[in-house]
Image 1 (cartoon, rainbow, N blue to C red):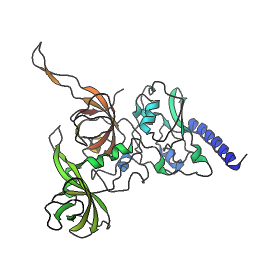
Image 2: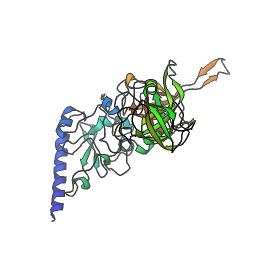
Image 3: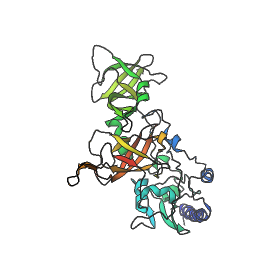
Image 4: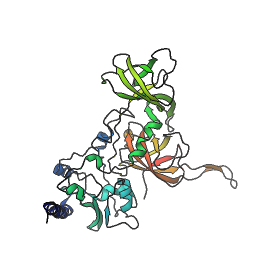
Length: 399
């Protein structure tokens, strides 16, 4: 038998032994301190993962190259066993292109209960991450269903490649769906919009600027030459439908630019545009950090808000579209929180008794939060059983 086969066989044996140890003694809370200490992998809290609440698009490393972030939800143990999906398998082999939401839905009726049944194996490097080729097993402990990584993939265990880049771990939601909103539009919080660098003047005899032109910008300081920006036009104001407060603005992406010369004003060359750049347009760092590795979970507090905008300007909202909600970290929302969408009941006239009657709100879909700020948050529509509209309600999920 070759040396590589012996190593691989021993690796599998050690993995199964470690699985037995894990099932016998690991904490019911997969995010407990002992789990993170045993692996040397820090568990990032939801506030850390969101990067704070300073802006709706923040500078940072691209999520395609940065280390994944994890939410640390406040787990609320349910009194009854978490219901499994119809036909839930005993084992599942993770495939390229899977998302954690897809996998959770394979095992569970309600994917947001995943943290309740996920068992980490401390002997697997980065036990919170799941890679293509991993085998996830459904086991029962004290009558409760639990899912654990039965063994790592042969690719990661083989002597030729013992380390897999963190970026190859599966994401919680489709990256392409989330990244698409950058090219369609953004939402700017009021305080953020007021503090962003802005287009002061166009170089040369131009009333408007387009690709190939240079613009003078105020408010850029300390950025390296070559830094890239998205140019955003401030659009319609967004008011909170609950109290009519101004909470932000819709932003229309004008194009991209690159810093050519620092100073105040600085010079930025427009490299690509899809509409004219005007005086007063704002500049956002082109690279943003969108954490995509987190656990879907039910919110730890009562949430009752509404959808106030949909990125892309469509009137009816479907699966994998990005929505903006009038609830954020100030209201207890965290990255990974799952909310049910309720279609607002129509007000109709009672032709028998007279007067007007509001019909009940009907459940229309599911949204998962992937970016939070003080008063607003971005969510991705994971399921849409009925048409979803702006001003529909978002609330804690129900079984």
